[in-house]
Length: 177
Image 1 (tube, rainbow, N blue to C red):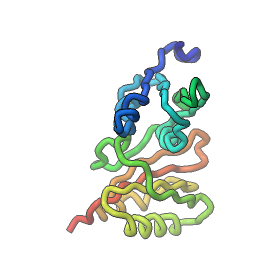
Image 2 (image 1 turned 90 degrees about the horizontal axis):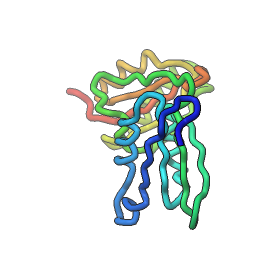
Image 3 (image 1 turned 180 degrees about the vertical axis):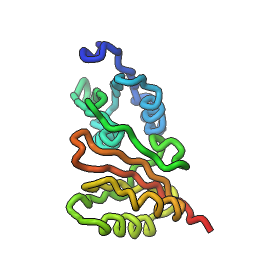
Image 4 (image 1 turned 120 degrees about the horizontal axis):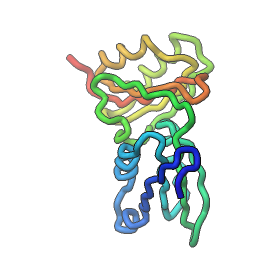
């Protein structure tokens, strides 16, 4: 079944065998997403409703539609959001789509500068290297980017489809001496 708007067949990924053998499918899912052509969707089949993945995929510019199939298993169709903004990344960001799920979520959209920057930098100091935080802001944090880089952190971010909120992922690194 192709996407009517693009005519492109979605990539199908059944993660049930991976999970059944005790594996973790997140890496395989992100590799599948990386391999999509522009406008292509991803049909994911799982033995449960993959709720945490919905936010991750939304952050990568995908909407989702989930439906239960047989025996409590689920089929989720991830489709590219219309007009999704391109993701900007720090120069050293090595494939943000492979980063772990965020361990901390911050909604800072109601705060005025510099408070979002202060809170993100403070939160990053509390996390272990490699951990990721996700934050929503009311504007692009231009002054935050060099501070993150100076502290050895990587980042990836973009505006949501409405252009009203900026979403940023920060992967904690080691400060450069």
